[in-house]
Length: 265
Image: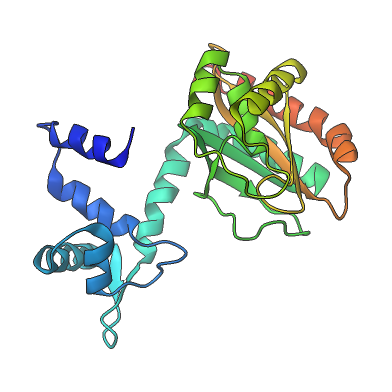
């Protein structure tokens, strides 16, 4: 669905509270690129007039979700905005049940271990145990990535019905992030079939150069994928063959254990 179609659908929803939607649009305007915004920039980025932007930023500032520099008058997200992520993590039974297995896997391998959750054609990092080798330090809990070119995304897609997985691929923004990125629907469908047969998925330097990743899906009681466990290592320390040989059995075992521990949710 396009942005225009989404907005038309929202306009047709009589229960939609527009002021709440606009407040969240203000908060979502801040990211790694736009860490600090002036009122004029918020107006331009969110599509609000100056009066509305003043009201929303003032309210969010009073509530503690935005902070305002008294000198520059620029706005930033406050620490309180981070609490929303904490509330999600502590309230999510799957994430909580996965933590002991992820911690064990991290200690056993001394490599980077992640739990990711599916969200349409994307995955979102819900837990992350960093290795001392520090791969991709810009990836934190809450980071969103496309599913098609990541091992956890492929692991999740591979356990969906093939027609559903293909539909998600077709609505993804398929692009080459690196020279190694597989980004055509047919080639990806073939990779998903391989992952379905093996019980795990791989991605070799397809989103980040130098990143080798192996992942397996976590399933609910119906056999539907609800998450993925992956281990990421550096190509400076592993070959793809060695990473697959060593890591695949570990992620498969961890994902199976979490699936069993989390059923029923």
